[in-house]
Image (cartoon, rainbow, N blue to C red):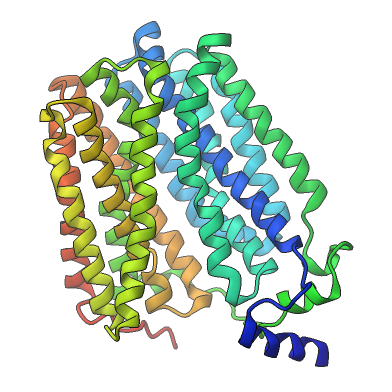
Amino acid sequence: MEQQAGVRNAADDHGAPPRAGRVRWMVCALLLTAVVLSYIDRLVLPVLKPELQARYGWSETGYADLAIWFQGAYGIAYLLFGRFVDRVGARVGYTVAVSLWTIGHLAHAAFTSTTGMLAARIPLAIGEAGTFPAALAATNEWFPRRERALAIGIFNAGSNIGAIVTPLVVPVIAVAFGWRMAFILTGLLTIIWLGLWLGFYRRPREKRSLSAAELAWIESDPVEKHSAVAFRMLLRKRQTWAYIAGRFMIDPVWWTFLFWLPDFFNRQYHVKMLDFGPPLVVVYLLSDVGSVGGGWLSSFLLGRGWTPNRARKTSMFAAGLLAVPIAFATQAPSMWVAVGLIGLACAGHQAFSANVFALPGDLFPRWAAGSVIGLGGLGGAIGGMLMAKFAGVILERVGSYGPIFAVAACAYLLALAVIHLIVPRYEHANLAG
């Protein structure tokens, strides 16, 4: 106890104690790699979509059905995976999640129709839904509160890294070795990761290579225990519905970008598969800037003495304005102007999301925030399913992304208005009794 107290006091003044060790950051690197791989596996099909659609005669509504079923399975699994991970722990939880999504990902190579692809897409969605809950559980096990936000920020950056890497690597594999090998080779990377995870990951007290100083640093926070809160209690709170509504309205736009941007560039500007990389890399680099900027802005305003209500909503309003110009992307005079408009909207999405994702932590105790996040994830998936159906019908009947981008342009400011109507004062939820 004296050693731990000494570590805690030193940390208050200087951060992590000297020679505390780096094993926990190796865990963080594994988590980052897993998120990168999950996004690569998720995005292989969208990158290949124009090629497979031309080769096998896929309809737009058939491809939309893939997105709908993926998001439905993802949303339900996201809601349940958090509690599963709480029960079995991060090591087993992540093993189950990665095993499921890898089986589904590899199975894509066996099908050529959108109906057949559904059999592969569902286990992929269920497994990938466990990525974030399992990574959070591992972070809670391995990092004290002082470092936890940094660790989460690092591994969460893997989503944009995966979105950047996929259009650069997958077309090269598909052209050189055939489209099936794009699924197989990326799936093999995930199998390698799973072996590293099982060989390396243990709870801190079970890790022999962990020094006493690093263990003391990891355990320097008081243990917070509380039984899981019932969903029915959370659903009686306005704050829960504010978060669900926000995710329901903005998540569909991001899913649309992930599933349809390669097709947009192919349809609108005749960009071939090998050339998807540069425009998509620019779009997702801009989204990274928005993610950091949105979090920085609200933190800056809070530091200036603004209330959380005013700081978060002002930041969301600024982010929502960035998305408005995407309404004109289909009339852009060149591809790179369209890339700029779409990238600006993606930056706005990530900036808006950074503040919406803070809502559970702002308005709920920590022991209830995970369940609220799960409910919000389900709400976002339901919204994504509806948007996917809308996109498929519009593209098949109208043949233009104009109406889809018009919805994206309005979604964020409307979401802010709904959130403000539900929680105008941003008061903390009372879960006592």
